[in-house]
Length: 244
Image 1 (tube, rainbow, N blue to C red):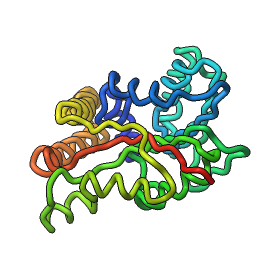
Image 2 (tube, rainbow, N blue to C red):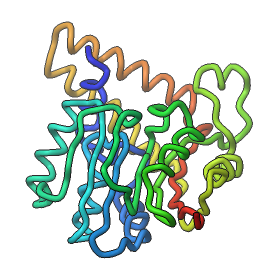
Image 3 (spheres, rainbow, N blue to C red):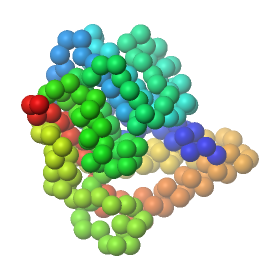
């Protein structure tokens, strides 16, 4: 079963697509205090929940969402139409690494999609190229809550601790002006929704696709409950580019 379709189905009831509640999401987006006519870019936008919410909060802003998932972008288009912002949202079915905008942006988002650029540092380098001088970036990344064992790193991946993650984000010419560290309850809500949505869909669609969805959900749940729960944190930082 296609990985992009699995992700789309898993996020059916949690379109934020990150371990963040709507309350804390709104706090991050309002804190940006975007200027009139702001241009927004969402790299790895998925169903574009963040961009759509920004367009609701900033009534004269425009946004571009870039993602490789056709099912996600189809859902994004439908949601934008339903919420009355479709005419201000451009959706681009392509890799974030190949996207070439005509103009720079006031705000660039990359939340939970740093893998698209090969890690956090190259993500920040790419984000900086898309930004106007002194513009804002909103970047979400995992970090280790405690020292991970070699076996845990092999299973989960290489991450810094929180202080190291902040330092890494600021190393490329940014300063942190706000942030949110996801709470355990936000992680749990996200993971129960991810695995549960996929399992529920599988039960309603018996056959090879249902079996593949079940396997993906159970594998993910095992890695969460017996792997990174309480070990892997998630932080979303609002970063201001330093003067150029």
